[in-house]
Image (tube, rainbow, N blue to C red; front, side, top):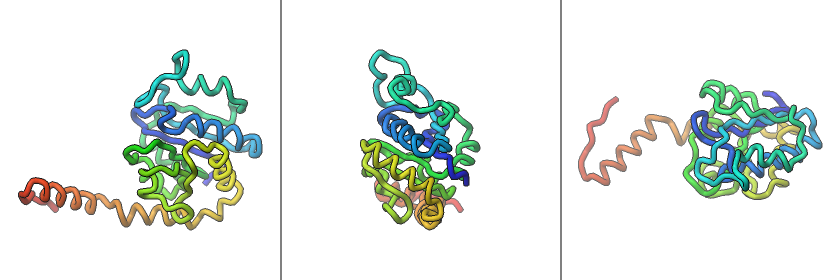
Length: 204
């Protein structure tokens, strides 16, 4: 694990760095963290589109719009764009923290994969994230719009990595116990049978 690496990955295919995914707060928090930890490196994975939201005032990307107003050394932030799934997994495995910020929405598969990789997830205290993250047990939760609280949580992850070893292990156990493919498929089949009133042909 790299003690100075913080990752904000979105989907490796199409998700974008936008307000619905907490990008403004994450970038602001990064600027605050770098002032105290100039060795910190933030990797923001995602495209420059708008996905579910709207463009920034004047058009263009939210990345360019926000960087104009933030004082953050460019050597402390990386924007690799869309990356292969294998690269995303490697980032999960070596990062000091994975930021998962989102409006109340459908929970992304990426947070489950980060947990399965043993990442320390710092997530927004919003309904879908609370489905899997228990604050202080298998990850950390901060208010969605509070960049100061997010920066404080990131600094804690960087300065005391050993304190979060148990949370990382608990995060992986959460995925192992609740989200095994065979178990998930079984629950989906049970639901379909209940809705249709007919038994399904089961394999395996």
